[in-house]
Amino acid sequence: MKKIAVTGGKGGTGKSTVATAIAVELARNYRVLLTDADSDCPNDHLILSVKRKKDSDVHQLVPKWDMSKCIKCGKCAAVCKQDSIAFVRGRYPAFVPDTCTGCGACIVACPTGAISEGRKKIGTVYTGRNYGVDLVSGELKIGEMASGEIVVEVKKRAQAIAEKLKSDFVLTDSAAGIGCPVIASINGSDFVVAVTEPTPSALHDLKRVLHITDQFTIPKAIVINKSDLNDRFRKKIKAFARERKIPVIGEIPYRKSAVERNVNMMPVNAEEGEMAESISLITEKLTGLLGL
Ligand code: SF4
Ligand code: SF4
Image (cartoon, rainbow, N blue to C red; front, side, top):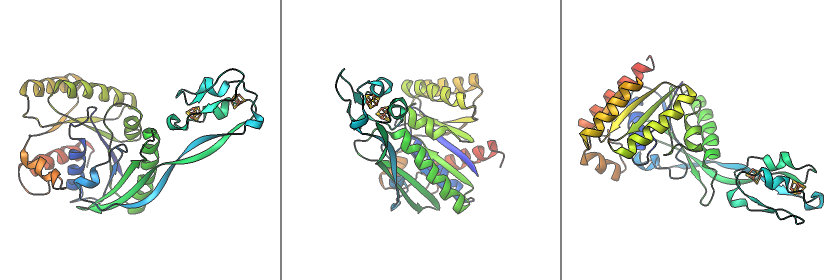
């Protein structure tokens, strides 16, 4: 089983477009499971027109206080990086649950055992299948902040399903940015595909997200989406890739037909043509780099 993370840094570069298209292309010859780890805003099920079914709830640790054991020392508030515990000397601590990420540090820090482990629902895992692709999609509950934690849980569930289905590939469509959800998406992957577009902000964020992948020493490649939008930045991306010795495994032109397919809940390579050819070449190079 090969695990590929599709990321890119800046939002809107086309990570989901590329992840779904590669999944559909791979599914012509392999069993493929696509994990939508963009839990704040999952959309792979829309692009693949998948009717999702609820698989399971995702829970997170939440601290519970027994004030009869509290000596008002304030240690729990001092260790909380999320500022989820308000403390005023001589008073009992006050918990602000909305910002708590369930790290458990307050439980460890409390000297009297006044804090114990509770749990709360932070999201839902859905499953479905279309275009030959098995989809596992995580969705963070509205108002919750722990999107890194939900990605970890969604990936665990996806791994269990992939093992059951004997999937050849597990693709993870990561969230945008370079924060915890992206790190959780990349962690454990065999290969990273970084999707970018020829704009200054996309190149800037590409460099940042590739810097993260360097920490994991995972092999990687770049896909330039909307490659004919700006030739100057297209060349800059290619120069950066050459300098960093990162292969550019494909360029996808900007075409109205691609937008229309996504609007109509279809992957860009649902029909034969220029888009399908671009994705086919990218997938061929990707499988080549994976030694298949
Ligand atoms: S579990 Fe972590 S984030 Fe939540 S209140 Fe305790 S220390 Fe803060
Ligand atoms: S660390 Fe424990 S004893 Fe100290 S204020 Fe917090 S709950 Fe109370």
